[in-house]
Image (cartoon, rainbow, N blue to C red; front, side):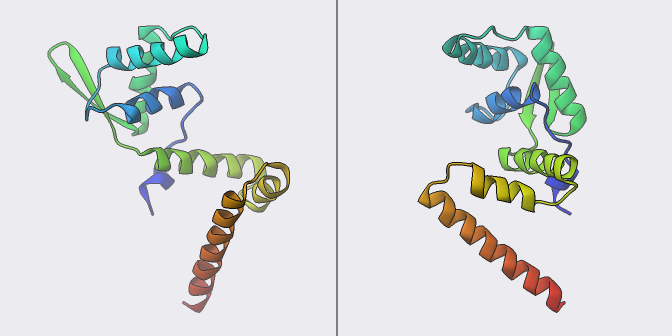
Length: 143
């Protein structure tokens, strides 16, 4: 079983924090650095920045969930991502499909195919994914 199957999904409050960490050029990041990054994003979009204590709580929760690792150096906490954006997306979409569609992905795919604005490139990528899924399904039936 892949690691993304075990990761709890990210909440809406956790996504921007993780995105700030993933976008960091440093292997480790402090709460203050995450706050500064989020404040810059908030200023650009006209939103209010998150308080330091809120970011700290979110990051501590992400450590408990296995998305971040933390270590202390003196009084400063350093954090690094243990999950990738792809793993977090996978666990979030998997949870959404299970909760919303009873684990059946076809209603979501139907919505995307019929209700979303898909470019020719999007359609080609979806066709490739369906083709790959057919190949995996055939291989599994033959075993």
